[in-house]
Length: 451
Image 1 (spheres, one colour):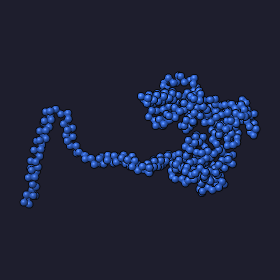
Image 2 (tube, one colour):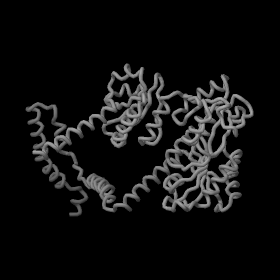
Image 3 (cartoon, one colour):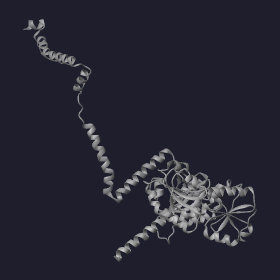
């Protein structure tokens, strides 16, 4: 009896905890549009049949619990976009799952990794003010320890400040923006003039130049990356939005951590020492493994190696000879910059068709390598069915259709007319042989003389 009571108590506690977790995420319906205005909402638009949505569901409940426990003003909800398709269309939902933070009349799309920490960080960043104040050196140093890249506006009211606020409202989904007085900055920072927009990263700071860097938003979008980064599919997607060129070193993920190929060391040096020459056009980094590059070049790239990718048009550049020194690497990058290097690939129709065919072949080969029996079943069964259908069509006997023609002729006749038609057909059948005998019996006069 005691064991039964204990199990019932555990069940009640588990159900209570489950309901408490679920309470952190609210199910939204068509009334949400009218009730959301006064709150900041983080909403997951999902489809019940979507596999990615099901994978995100437990993470989404963790996000709700984290924001609730931390005292964040952000409310977390989820909406079935298939049941409320009209409202989903109003919010610009085009795929599943779609994560949006809704603040007033603004809607911010989340495009980062679908992990709890990344989503929570996004929610806290976007829910707050677009530009945060740094009132002291202590606060500045604290923020420098928390962030790898820090944008700061220094100075009073000015047209540049208005541009900075606009850029912050647009790009807060990616990074933080701050404002400070010159006294709040470290003594080592020396600005030629005020007001100024400064980015602190890579152990130094760099100032926005309105005449050389053109649009402030484009400059911020470029500088939000560190000078040298580890590149993955998500980073390449973000770099594609900036329209930049990515120069990366590729090495095998199985190489021990303590061993860095020569290319990576050279890339890091070029990114730092040649920043003024290459920073506006290139982003430097390294990539683990070569699967993405193999799909891009539709071949097998050696590991380790160096490749330059144009993320805007899917062109790529390969060195004509192995790179073993910093001079060779700088020369290779300069040749891409001045247009003398040979470009491969691209995003033309023919290249897209070739890439789709290559990806399909690679997928089939990987299936057969991992599980030959499964590959035979998946691809052999449809081919067998199609072959049988083609064989049946080719070997089917065709009828002469005479019976059908007679039947068509008799259609529309009355019973008496049909009987008369049958009698005429029988009479013709009887008269036919006699006429043939008469024709056979008549002989030509010449034949009679011969007889």
